[in-house]
Length: 639
Image (cartoon, rainbow, N blue to C red; front, side, top):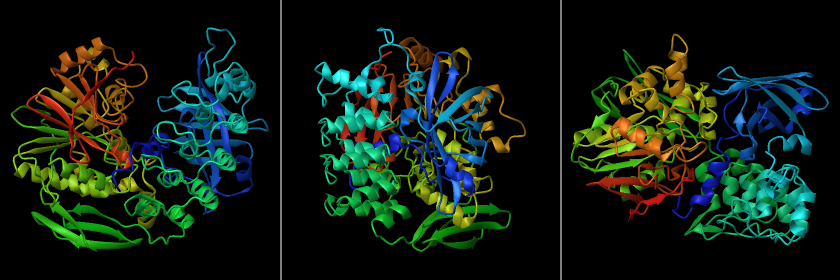
């Protein structure tokens, strides 16, 4: 994919963070489906002072099965697949992998029930086709002006009168408000009644105003707001607008795997053959994504998925399974010290020795360091980044000398080339050792999710692979598989000289708990896959595998932020100068907390961006996809 398919395209990944095509349980179609189908909105009551907006969406699949999705209102769309979905005339129940379950009563007014979190906490959840303004207002705190709400809350409440009043006071309809967005942009995301966006368009809001590289139409496609997509087009939104970042609504629809939005755009004159860069068009992008529903809209033939190998081993030998254009091929392999296997031009190197648990977590010496994170199945982008920054040569072989290179987690999910990424890293680790260097592959939350059977974020390609092989995707990485056994040896943190790398972050509670690197890693790894444990995770294992653990923590950038004092305590406790993390996506690699925290998730999951952190002789720089060496910027986080 050309470099100019940049950050704005990745808003699809940021907004629509789980694919609506993920594997999930479904129930046979019946008359009850028509009662449930469609969108629902409701409130999850956390406590008397806090209520969170929730979205549901139910639809009937091509196989006639009822499927459902859930998501927070803050994301604008329900994309997390429901499992164990059961519904009849009066009751509904489902579960969400690794999060909780719901059971409730269906009435003429809505669905009222209880959400039970994974920790066992029971919360009231009420869902309706359309909430009243009183119900919506429960999510918002009253302002200092008493009962008066600000304009952003008014938009979220679908309060047209509040918008009228706001505009009558001289506020321009196309000016930027709130977090630097126009009223129309805010309405597209927040108002599910669609009243505000329609009112604004009818009263002169510019449907083609560009903000941060986005038009309202691109924004509506990103949030799968099909009603407003149609409304914008009716008000002369330019369906073929191409931003200077080379983005378009069509590109957003393809990257978002939204066939319905793409069909609306094409039916209204959008041209997917317009060149994005050189001879590369949205049609080429669609072919790369290889989503059948998207290709059908564009009248492009679908040849099926290709992938592999998935290799299992036993005492008698190995078995490799390949899929080529939807057809399965099985290959029996005898044991050798190492060997290359091949099918239909795809080659994979297998090493003969059984991988050993990575126990050494601290390395000191005179060596350069490189690091990336969050590859998310974007193999081509990853390889380009490595080649152009001297980590591998043009033959994709290690060329980093005695340097140490860190992949700070999240090889799985989102993208369509996960298998390629894993086999490449599996082989590169050996190459690095043979050249006197070292590759450190750490586990991230998405890697652990897949190992535990949480498949809500996998690319549709892998859902199709699972159907062809009649096996859940995670089973391909069980114990007894080459990649599964290799992944189980990976640590969750590593220290190079005085720099500590982990996927999410180090919570300040690790200091108060007196936990050091080895204990964190051992406890995390011993309780890695729940289904393989004789008992449930213990209290410490539960802490390390949840939101404050090293693969999930985001407290350097979001939510309740760690203080400067807490960062200093972490550095002192672990005897380090810097904490380097991925997990939380940024436009580029950045320094935070006066350089003490460095975030390296530079949005490689978009398939169009990517940077690597470079360190040598005490100096940090960042390398981009062109191989340019750039300075690191320090960013202040408001605390």
